[in-house]
Length: 120
View 1 (cartoon, rainbow, N blue to C red):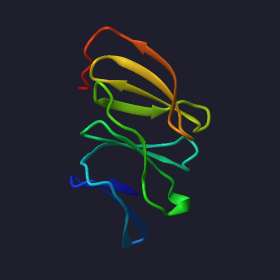
View 2 (tube, rainbow, N blue to C red):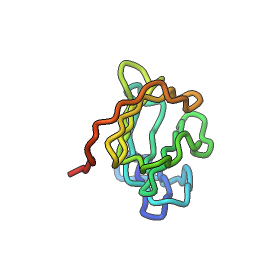
View 3 (cartoon, rainbow, N blue to C red):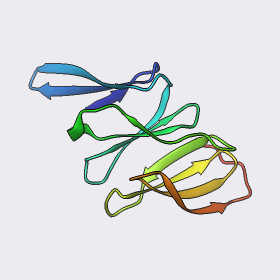
């Protein structure tokens, strides 16, 4: 079970019966607003309140890697494009939808919806 705290800390809880073990996986120093698991369970996307997107690979037990940073407008949400976990899609508050290559953060495509976006 992965859990993010308001302080920007990503926790992992390993639960076995009535016992559990907690591990701190990453500290990105920004409140995490969304935590998305890839379809093959090998990667997590962490979206912060400030609009930055990080990737975290549990098998590598390393730090979260900053993939995308706020441009002209904060990233509001992101998710993996399936099948696989090579690409993600993001949407900004200003209504820009973008497709990203997760390996290096290259923007492959974008579409402006010409409308402000809100998540409810």
